[in-house]
Length: 244
Image (cartoon, rainbow, N blue to C red; front, side, top):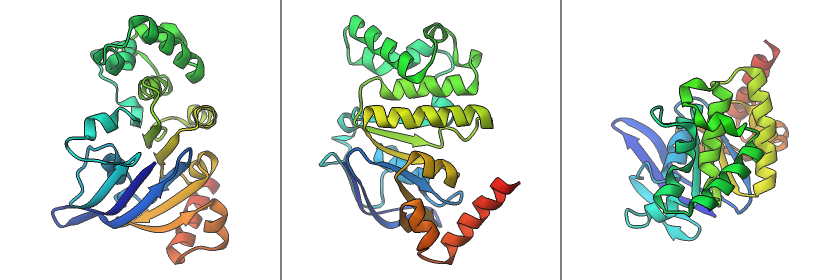
């Protein structure tokens, strides 16, 4: 479904991605994890066409991502960032339906899809008439998910969607995300700093460092067959945080 071949990206003297190649398969949920600044979010933005690689090729559903194809490819992708990334001067409903309205989807079809998404995200429909500032962080994130899912995308990209939430809200949304992934069966790539969250939501974990992939596999692979000492150090750091 998604393939990046030999992609690299530099910002001045800083290397964000270093000749990286990776594939994400159909109906596969993958978590990108690693220290801050390791290239996780850059990789995600490259897939959606918000960052152009200095070298290499990005393909989505067999089509190369270029300036000519990026708009069409983006319609196959739902993209969710921290706190939902909602437009504050629009109601939540306006945020959710913006692309469907732009594409002149019949109003009855839009309304039916909104009702479906309220049900699957467990967001009361009356919340959609409020502005983002009038909702809690968890509610805004559900609205962001609704917007990302509105056009029935084949691919869902999530950039640390739960990072700013308190533990109880985060746990509830983790459960809802897991259910959504299983219900829709999309190709999902999500960025997180939390190994527990990665293992709970994704069957495949990709650990990154300094723009490169250190290890790619299941949690069991990381625990039993660490590719290098950094893998064990990263896991141990996560355990210490949990212990606190």
